[in-house]
Length: 456
Image (cartoon, rainbow, N blue to C red; front, side, top):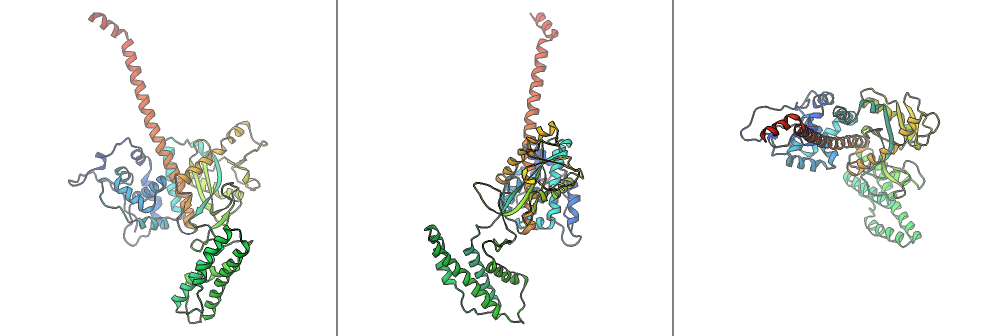
């Protein structure tokens, strides 16, 4: 069924403590709670749920947990534990009284992400953009000019080596044979246990001829097990999709060579790709390409999405601008500032594309604005170090897309919290200055002087 609506009961409970009596209402999370439009968010998320079954958990609770998770870089289990300890986190998630039990099982966050999908998570990012506009952190005119850049979101895999992948595939084939009741001629378990440590030692000792011989033996063992299993499969055996996939991955590993395209780098994450971004400290990264769009002035994230199959940066430009238009309520940016990797994109939309180093066809004001194109680089760095963009633990291409969008929402929440904190300090400073000016005026007024003379 549809999620439960968040109801703030005004009545008191004799055995519970109201959160409004515990917290400081000037706290940034408390102020942010009133900045986000939760009712509108519930209306947009409700279509992702069925009319049948038990009612879902409240939207403000689950969306708040997802916000907090990607803001403070914690796992599904840890965000639930910290929610139980912090009254501010509970108030942010829509609770009226302080709770002493877990709000949900950590696995509920996984099911919520799967149910929302990429489209539903975009509404979470849109809610942060609206909150930025409401709190005046972002001006409406700032949405006309954006900065776009790409990065790599690494997948949670170990460094892909041929020996490890082939040995893991051989183990999967052996387990598949046990499930089907097939007796293999040989499993090569003892040979693999001896060869795998030797491969690393030979490489360290620069004995590459011996290393290649050991690698060949590991691959031959995979081929022998694969062929033996195929020979003993009969027509009356019905294989599931997962079992067919195990056989297909083993065939890919046997056939792929050093210079093959579309290699298999991980068995549990076959969508992983090898990307080279020209970094001196990390030549290759294994994951998916992610694109981020921020406002030129405030560096507020207004677009974030992933792209499969490692496309050229220029080919991602039109789809990224389309997402920015959707998240900003059908407001297409007038100018987009990009780096030299977007040259030759062939974009033919209404947005003016300004490339780094460009001299012709732009005004002096646009040249000055181009100097702020590098402002997106530290934002991506914060999304990786302070958020969860550095490594994706979610499954499949859908998990990659969801993680990128939620990382953008978490970055916006961090900026909003900092903005509300500084705004509170600035307001207190202005009030202090006003009081001082009133005291000075009161002391220097003629009424005060005459009163002093009469008293004298």
